[in-house]
Length: 275
Image (cartoon, rainbow, N blue to C red; front, side, top):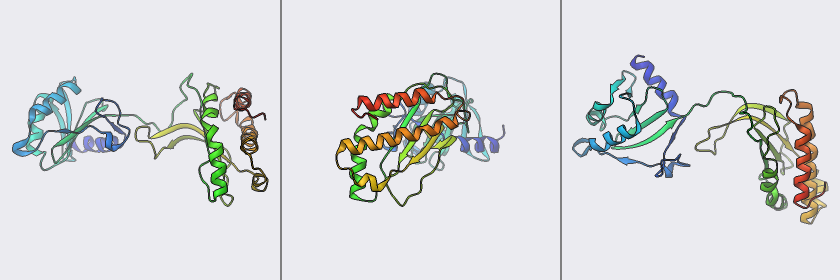
């Protein structure tokens, strides 16, 4: 691999890197990333860099990635020396030959450690992995809609947990949005192989996602006043909506819709709502 190819590969992988925190676990946000201070110029401390390199990379050779015309395989024993010569001028990275581990250096003399993860464009649902169901009712445009969302959201976690089971098929996630903005359009069921998760710092994508929206009858909804009436109506509507999965069983590789819908009813009953 020549310098240009190596640097191009490095740039393609850096966006899928996750960085470690103080406990050598994946940091959950930028503020939690553990930075090490090695200094630059006359303040450069090669011993700190060597210690991190030796503990993090078991192999003898690693890639030093600086620029498109200056990236190469180098002996680990001399990497710290090479870094000290250029760190005040350039940002750079050290990567193992399997492209699974990375140490990235900032030109001001600090560095962080991380792993490079593989996020394929699609994958099969891992066998035995339970379905992750997510109900959302968080977009509102009025005080009344916000009240409805608050009442429903009190029970959503319990409902999701009861449905966290293996129903077979190929679906890993089921996202159902309870639409509380009357002017917004709904979207029908769609199955997506990979969905970006902008809110997640470590899990960049969700795979095998079924999602659709459910819209209540706003006239009927406004006639309801008690929490019991509102939640009973909402959960009944959500349960009825899952019938759409029966028509998608071929697409979902024989997902067990009957078991899922039966568990949905049982979960509602546990919450005190008979549908």
